[in-house]
Length: 119
Image (tube, rainbow, N blue to C red; front, side, top):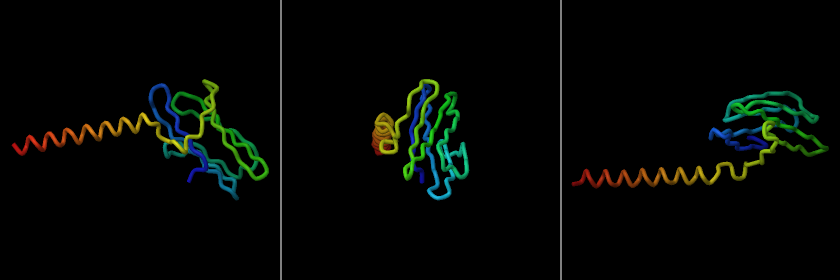
């Protein structure tokens, strides 16, 4: 289970679901994008940063370790902006609206086809 996750959609409308797992006792780190592991590191007990590409954009994920707290910051190095933690609202409402529209249209078309078959 990820300790933190981010949802990022680039300018080409490609979505990335990025997550980090950081073992409490072992300090082992696994970073994965769209369920594919992109970085594994072992025994991380001090601050560290990782750089990687999502598509054609360079990102940096920083781990800050204080006494009993850990924080994770994801930054788009191209734009310089930080990506907010979207684990609470992982999928934007536009995706929900599109999915709802597709389901509604499919139901209407199915009903029309059914009524035409009855006649």
